[in-house]
Length: 298
Ligand code: CAA
Ligand code: NAD
Image (cartoon, rainbow, N blue to C red):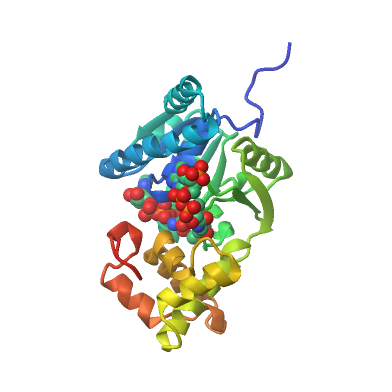
């Protein structure tokens, strides 16, 4: 018969998602919905409890859409999805058999490197490591592990259960087997994938973040109100959300982390200049939807 030994980069079936916040919870949910065994890990039990409730709510919305007049089917879909999911405050046990470890912790290079250096000691050779980072170089994160050939970027979009795109990012060391396994997993997650090199912001954020910052600068100069800019981009350019609604939705802290990193790395790029208005709002804990106030009140 066929060999049953765990070959390198076999099909991704068991997934660990590190970081159970906004993105991690969404990624874990979609993995569970699409039949993967998934462990969602966060250092904070409180975060995990909150995310668990959010996932249960979101799966209901997905089930309602997929099984319109089929309450029985919807119930089964919800039960089997939730049965695929574990939550934990450490990855240790799940690491022993994982096919993929995808991190979605806060946008901090030192933390991401520290976690992968640790996991590298525990995970078997077959395990692929990937980051959901919005703005940090994948190469630099990968340098903390001894498996850059089995490392890449898997960048999802918020809200993960709704947004159909996945950016698959390869570094020069990423093997073809690893890249192919990541793309195949993206398709198994029912996402459309695009390929991109390890360049700041990949495709979407390289265009979207400077656009959001230009909107902030426009309002900072007093040229128009945030409300009118949003209305203009929705009705004049067909965007589902205006830039200020979207900035609040993404989180102003996340926007600031991205801008801090890029302005430090590329001081001569005017598109990556910092905004005093954004920095002030973050200092006041006006982080957008998640704290109840950003450019708007929620
Ligand atoms: N879980 C499951 N389903 C959800 C959901 C969730 N969290 N949120 C929305 N939905 C579903 C709803 O059930 C609804 O389904 P039906 O059409 O069947 O009713 C549908 O999505 C639309 O939702 P709503 O009617 O509540 O609201 P909406 O029409 O305004 O859509 C939106 C909401 C999909 C978020 C839309 O406003 C949108 O596309 N906004 C832009 C989002 C975006 O650009 N995201 C990318 C951010 S950048 C990023 O993520 C990268 C980064 O690194 C920073
Ligand atoms: P978030 O703050 O909602 O979640 C991050 C989570 O990481 C928190 O729950 C925190 O408790 C947890 N965490 C911190 N240290 C940890 C550790 N040592 N071990 C395990 N968990 C730990 O942030 P988010 O918006 O979900 O972003 C996560 C990542 O995804 C970032 O790299 C971000 O750039 C990226 N991203 C964000 C978006 C977005 O729209 N917000 C979109 C795509 C990618």
